[in-house]
Length: 321
Image (cartoon, rainbow, N blue to C red; front, side):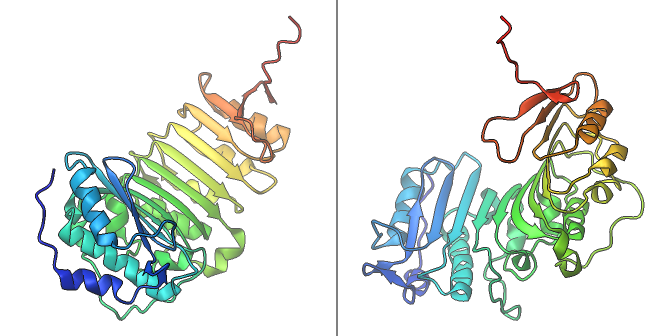
């Protein structure tokens, strides 16, 4: 177990003294269900915890195994917390945890779940924690409003993206913003994004021009995209030589722009999660190698994706026997 650190009482008191309360306890909930992660949730929770710091110490000393890759999970729920105040206080909890419990450089994963609405953000305030010390951060799961990708205490800068091997993003963004993420995610092995919105094209959050020449991304193995806009022009400049698994949920009628992409012959698994014209589906299947596993999933169907064989979804029906 880690050696207990001396925790400055005044730092902790600052975190909880002005917190909203639930049943006379701070509206902060700490939990840990495995030996490599801990969750900090700013929300009313039942039963409440009278002393969240005491529970943090208890989890770190008793449950967290310092030899394992560590992941911190952060959640901000609106309601008891005023949004701007809660957003900054969440960062202050992160700073407190990284400075006094498990050092930032030992963090491998970070998961952040924010409200799906823009949060007021004062960019003149100093960052509440040293982002540059998260040198070991490789996995980031993030859900929230697109404005917080830049107006944030954890902005999606090229340096942050360049260190990641996994990015899972649940956020409505423009097509050009997805291009920014792929361009700077030079070490991405797994990239998931939901959702690219066509109506956000005039309202991108990153200042970025798409690459004019071919860009090799040799690390990317798994790509999952949900999109209302045509992703053909997005993917065309990227040479994804190691891509092995593709999952697309494309919410537009024709996908012929995907036919010119170079990775179809080498992918091992393709899952198409949408209604798609027969000719388009058959055309994409024909581009794949003979050993590619090709699946189709109707959006309204809760069953697992079905193999797509010879242009139809194979039901593996045994009624003839």
